[in-house]
Image 1: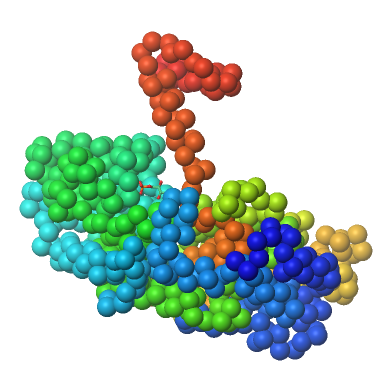
Image 2: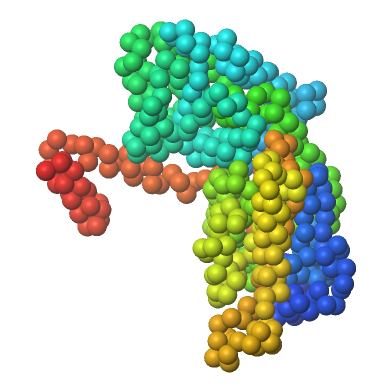
Length: 545
Ligand code: G6Q
């Protein structure tokens, strides 16, 4: 890092603060009036993705200052450190190498003196072989029936990526296979996911990096009982269970043959693991070739992020814009609106990626932040959101920068549908930016008293990310785009984007409360009065009257 001063004391940050004071009231209408080519000038293309960021409240000066901040924050060196396998996740003392999961065969990425790429491809090859056997029916269930149902059991990073990718790539999935996902320890999740499934045709993939997670292991044990209850033979486990994990010993202890285990490594974070063996359900659904095309998409954006100058680097630009609104305009959230029904779980996936990564309160050195870190990410697919919460984005009092994601060619061409869809995404970005002035509203004959209600002030920033079509490759590119945008933000904020200590406390407390709920005799409770009262009330009332 070029400067050891705290972030807000550094000249690059101070220059941005000063610049913010000059620009905060400038309207996007003015910026577009001043420069008739703004729409082209503030747009970049990389790895086949087009990013229009012209409808952001930035000038060339803003971008120059943001790029200065990135350089001053050592972004280039941090990128190189990640790709070189350095232990940049310092609080867990781990390398951060999801980029190695999609490195081409024959390339080299070193961790502790060892090239990890051959091991990555060895696992991919085993996954491909297994996926083919499920897809062509040569892997049979215990009774000789073909496997038709795949149930991924996992939670957090071992669930959200697989669910999102399955939904996103459903167009490419084998319709003869039925993929379901169980994550919640709420028994309803298991019951609903397995309803109407024939155990003799069902394969469970137990996906857990640690193989100790309470929810996953509870669901895995229930799955084992469900299979054994129907098939009545312990040997059935070998045909109906496979594991994805880093923990061979626990997999064996559970009773899964470790020959049916697909491995990954501690340098893959849970929320960065959908392209590791955690993606086994995705690969079975869409086939090894499509899965590898997805990895190629990831890799194309990795290379773009690693090599493109910041001025033309999509994830860098996106990350810096997030910092700009979060830290200077005081925006609390980012809305992500994919205009594609297949991407309906993409915002949920991004919530974990962004918020678990950058929801941090101290710097890498442990100093409390005196600036804002990760914003809240949220969203729904368009056009549905337009008919619900978009009102607040257009006319509410909160500034919500938005990402619109759109594809030029539909996967399901149907009459005029796609043109209507895309007209809406383009119109929303236009409406947010330019709004409707009182003069325009009056000119429509609106009575005076109604004018303020109908005015849209505009100046609401948004990006439009456009790709040609939602393919496995494009999906990989989109995910990598956000992964590296998150990395860029974390680098500026000087935080560890790869740990998640905040989720530990609740887990530990739950382990203490479980026996208190289940005890036959009234337990001695030593919590606060609220927690004690809730435990007592639950104990009193849980039995059906
Ligand atoms: C992700 C987190 C977390 C994790 C789950 C599941 O980055 O670490 O969401 O993926 O807690 O953990 P296991 O895969 O170990 O079951």
